[in-house]
Length: 324
Ligand code: C5P
Image (cartoon, rainbow, N blue to C red; front, top):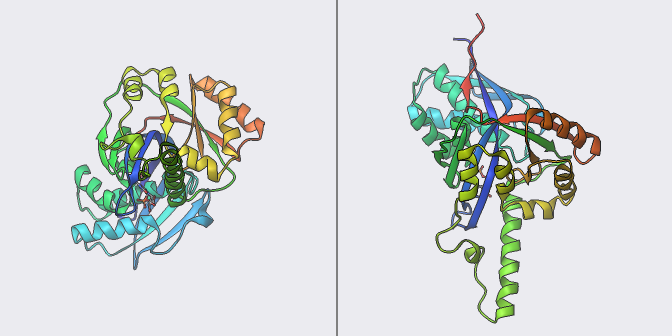
């Protein structure tokens, strides 16, 4: 076999509820992942030793050494299966922008897992691939699964959302700049600590840690309104229910995004949200035609670097059949 090519989607978070920081530095989440039709394509070929080359959108900002998440996924699969398929060279063609809140690096890792599983004939099923994916990064398992799914824990414990076959029309506004995911989580922790110090001082009680007051002891909670919108396929209700606890933190680090969000809403989007840790902003449109109008107007408004349209949900990482 000369090589295996896998296509893998970007993800949006339709809800991202973040609990207080855990002892391991991560945050417990409840999130609703949604895979959209913006794809990276990766090809895995046998090679003397592991290596990676990256082309396309933001390629110069992706590490081409052992830090590359796709290579870490290759190593994790090898370790888990004791596969002896030799080295692998991974070629990544990027269309998902880097460090944009769309889990592009996690997508490439998921694609590498699926590609090497095929290349080496390791024959792991989806449940085993999901387990290995979860060790590689918080969003990697979802990129294997795709569709729409509720994520818990760090985001790696997934439950597919049962929903009708509605297709939603999204417009993505890519920003001129990047945000670091750990920096955005840290900013949220600081904002919550400051808010709880302020309210403790006002009420004369000891300061509470992090967001314990907001989410209660049960931690972050799945939004019933959002899930009901998904079950009924009601785009208007979905637009109103979109939420992201990281948004205020992302806006504090990247204030220009306020203008982008406001512009999309003024132009008729059913909902607007920072995607994950940002800085990409996502907008829900009522139809494909509305998405086309919205994308054109947003791009003319000068509030972002570029725009793209995408539909969701779409399936997770999948092998592209070889052309014969
Ligand atoms: O797991 P992954 O490497 O994708 O996470 C990147 C960073 O995002 C983590 O190092 C952590 O700072 C932050 N994070 C978090 N809680 C999560 C997921 C990510 O704090 N549930």
